[in-house]
Image: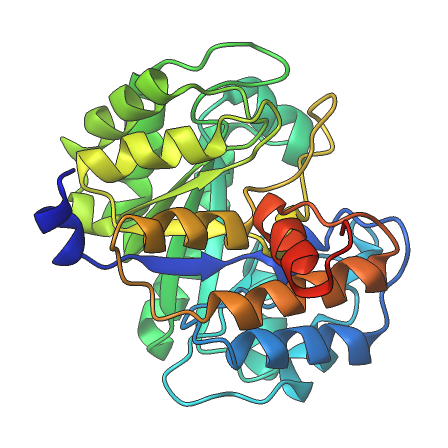
Length: 309
């Protein structure tokens, strides 16, 4: 990507921290803090913030307050606030809370699907299809996630053809965008680029996004490789929060601050205020009682205070 291409391009960031970043936290985070986090994110210029998940509280107690969080946030003009829903019951709960955009998910790995949701890929699609149909009837936008696109903790490598099949099915069912997720953070740039190119033969590049976990420090390199292929939507989590509980040593999602620093340095517009976002990342890290997972966030803190972050 040369400078002329970069200057003429823009990228949409999908902030997944409030959902994917917080869902694996051991401590229960107060509802008021989740609302404050999302309101702070809305003020940074982000235009797509995934708020929560309407999954069963029995399986994910951290997000048991999904309805309260969604109802309590300030809905800024021009900002989308999608939520993840696993099934029809979750969809009904989300709609009762006033949700206007949802996300659904499926795995590219049969082994992961069985272990994660106790269902085959075909069974998971059978669950998803009526949710998407109802959402279309209700005028609700649907985004799709495909997990384990570059590797599975149970089966190892995942063939690109399996990723293509699941992504194509979700797109055909009516998902306006498909996010391709390296759930356990095992992918490298050439692998990421080849996977994306394979999917783009069946699903338009304009309908694709990438979602990289940084378990092995490859996320930014993978994103760059996919940018060079033409992707223009990137999922990221504030302060590098999150991570897959099935990945040994998982260090979380790629940090939104780090992605922004790279993009802005390439002359790519995001519409997001990095300084404000980094301040929110430091606030969240303090709230969680742990170190900031964003290298850029730590560097900016040091520059502001003169002390190590």
